[in-house]
Image 1 (cartoon, rainbow, N blue to C red):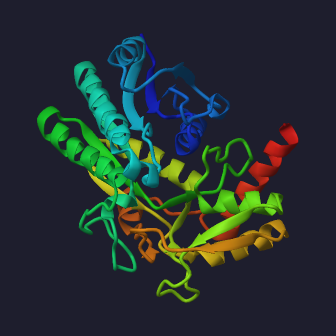
Image 2 (image 1 turned 90 degrees about the vertical axis):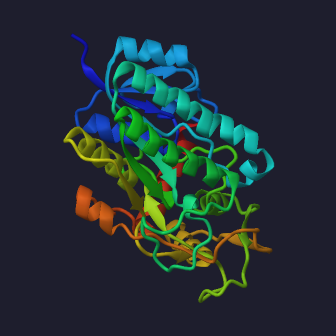
Length: 329
């Protein structure tokens, strides 16, 4: 008899790899499917690794035939908003087209639990200081549009085929595994905290600050940051919620408060005890001045709360991960 396992698509990426480790630590057996376009084999620290593409129906058939898959957690999306504006087709083919292939495979093999890695980008530009799940969904770029398209697909597949889902809309993922086993490895890197740490390690680098004239206390835009291990734990809780018969739901995952770009840089200077030089740049088109999310619904339904998401903890864990990378090379 085949053991039940959990399928993690994109499980060699930043959030997927932390979720894989979280599930393994909780006793679940996992199968990680990743084509390693943006993922890293070294980040798969548990479970069975299957190299391949989530858009390959034959590869999915082999996985579902070999393993008794209880649920699928889907992280295999492209996530560079600026690139999506320049090359929307790439994003629709990967983020939407491949999700259809996965959902059809689940329907074929009778797997009815789907946990989706979505984004606060589905909300678009908001004036609300704290965004709830009921906020209108008006994405401002193709990346957000593709995530919203999958959210709508999940509603339709649920109605037609009984596939229940949990959708997580993240704010800004940050930090690294507290024990230093995993961290952020993006190429190119676009996230503020790792860019700040690169500048802390290399005095020739500068962090670009896009916009210094926003209606915020220090003029730089404000974002909500959430520790990647808090995100991973939420995915486990969301999966267990569905396994216990929960109905389809959507949850924000944020810390419920924002930090400006300049505040983040100041925290990074304190943690690293290094100078971090900056250069001011004009605002980027479509960037809202303030984004933060309410996590009350996740607390009420899943019993989840952000436990590691204070800024200095996130930066400390990310800095420790980076230091470990340097000593291992």
